[in-house]
Length: 443
Image: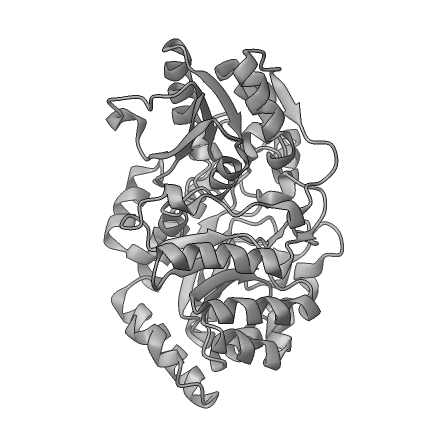
């Protein structure tokens, strides 16, 4: 049996004005484009779990309208995000019409399995690793069961090395490695691996080392993104992880929270190990904006006052900060646009990401806004792009949020503003006496 693993890639705003902005202001959708260009780690992992004698292949489809020939296979495994799920369903329908069995999984399928099953022969709810062997056996026997749900949580110590060898080395300049899954915090809007698993789990560092070895055998100078929601939750384990990454000789990027700034020794070790940049979700520069968005301990609110200092501490270590903000939070009114710009000008993070609050299916945010009748176009998942507004904000109009996003993007991604941030980063690493920061400015 031949199994084709198919990732729906590509990112584009539904709003044509935002799409046009993205073409002229690279920073506006830069992070989303980088994510879309990464190979699907989940599919490469399932490929590694596929037993012989089955054959496997990996495919990416950026635009279903340009697809002229379907991948030839007996079973297609499709993973997708909400914004591309309409195209994924169209692809699944075409494959099934040609006689190919289809299984779908990922965040969207987990959140809405009853919707997904209308377009496929089987849907994976939650983590795919524990059930993949059974799916392959059932498909080979022609008896796919319709719905597969893992019992318990997958042990990351059993994770295989993903099939990086299925990728074209000339096509990718960034690869992904997952060192942990889940997050101890529960942000209302977060659509990440927390939807797939109920607890935070860490991969043993020897497994991480094996995956990095597999990458460096194929790519001489790779840039690695850690596919984690929050890498440095366990500080004691973080030192061992950083040592392993450093031994691999790669440059790398990850997502974390502001607590990493409280450990100067860890920051120094990260920079020495090749860490170029960290993404930190500040969400809002205002106390009212972050109040209540983390549902367990209101943790984001407790960390608000250290946000500005955190940027300086991280960048003085020679590590760039990608500061992320979410526009349209219930606690923010139209003054938030000026507040974000003021924050950026004051602490000059190397990169900035602004998005609008997006109610992804399966999140507490979506459920709440649906109850409050604030979703504008329920079920129109093509709007779940992080840039299109599909809800009624609490303290501003829809039009104000849309225009505020465009206006703020025009200002903070201008050449002059970008140059000021780069200069600010340079000043930070000079204060911290970390000349390694020159590498990032030159890259």
